[in-house]
Length: 277
Image (cartoon, rainbow, N blue to C red; front, side):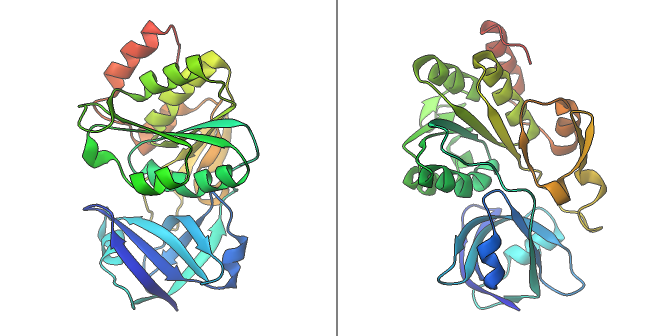
């Protein structure tokens, strides 16, 4: 059994847990995930590991309550126990010393940013985090992101927090003013595609971490298979991170969603910058 040692509500649908884990947590690398099971016969719920504390033998995860299984998990409290934690799974994200790194995280993709930013900072990079959202309510974990970033740019479409603007504006401005050596994008397939459209113009390497927001009662199969560069990729085995210079975005967008309300405006900005998707 794995006991919950701490719990905090981040938003209406997102809960942060610190959970007692085994010695196997030393093997967890940035970008990997684990599977939580409340009961032996219960759903397998994949969650990104945001932090590993080897001294306390705990992991920190964020649970996004979207269905019966994740809602049941989100309703658990400090002192409750899970049946087990399986993993880690997925290929770790490459986080070397690139130089200056631009990290774009939108919505719940921000959750996956935390361990990557921490690793990038530890490796000696200058980290610039860009957090776009429709409004202030869409900016998650701002304090945590600021604690491990050299610079944070908040962008809201309605101007309610930070600057008024979109991913397109920030990425274009930063690439014009700074030398960006590596880009990471965290979020939906649409967020990744839009960021990638900008990095191609400046020929900057880019890695992507997809937030799927889906669980599968059958064991993370079927909906988690996508085609990348004509090769089959199983997100449940390979993980949700990949080289963003690939084909297959349309399939990813169909399966894993987009950012409603942002697409048309961003398309106009891309056209103005003469950037093709």
